[in-house]
Length: 88
Image (tube, rainbow, N blue to C red; front, side, top):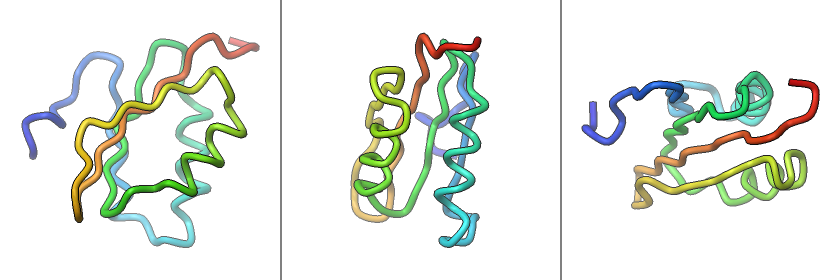
C-alpha cells in the first residue's frame, strides 16, 4: 500500500476502484453519511471525481471538508471529513 494511505486513527479507507461505477456514488454517499464529526474517509479513485465533489458539497455544505492527498493520472486520493453535523 502507498505509505500515505496507511490508516490513522479516525481515518477510514474507501477504495472506489473495486466498486462498479454505477454503484460508486451511492456507496460514497452512504459511507460519508455514516461518518461522525472528526472522522475522515480517505477516498481512493482512478480519476478526479469533480462531479461527485459538487454533489457532495451540495448535500453536506459547510460540514464537509475536502483535502487532496494525491492528484495524478490514474491515482487520486482525497480525504473527506465531516464536522459539526446536526443530529450527532
